[in-house]
Image (cartoon, rainbow, N blue to C red; front, side, top):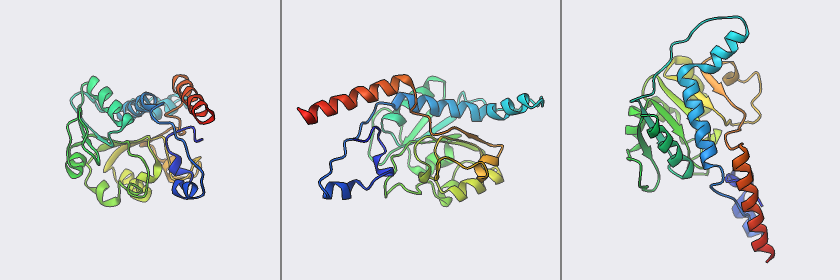
Length: 229
């Protein structure tokens, strides 16, 4: 049993099934937890909170000018359980929310991907990683993002072209990135992303709340009971 939703990131599920191994995944247990972490990163990047925290602790008092999110456009890429929660909270703080999803979903105004990238002041990545979505936010798509936009990724690092992201952060085309996930984890301290002032980092912790963990374990027990009869 895989205690989580991203089993395909760690194993080849089709091959396991071919060998007679059934993989049971647990979905939805952390939708709110991940969405809240996404919004936390969005707010932190908009106001440069992590940078000011580091500077104040080091004895440097340099107030940074932030971005007010009220009335800004939040573009949510991927409208599964997490993406819909991100949209709900974003709407609750006064943002205009638009979404893109591979299949039609109710509840969030939809836009084609190019329109979303061009309009969104904040882009939130909430896709599942698979063969179709690996490298989804390519260099070409990053170039179509609104200049000065914020990118938040709490899904999977491999959804984004890392070299293109770094280049866009260096040029300022992306104002700031809030990242909880990376191509290689743990992120090494000498990695370019770890050295950039306009990147706010967390340690793949978006799903880690007591409430989400308890839900995960309860659902795992239910699956075991079903299997064992």
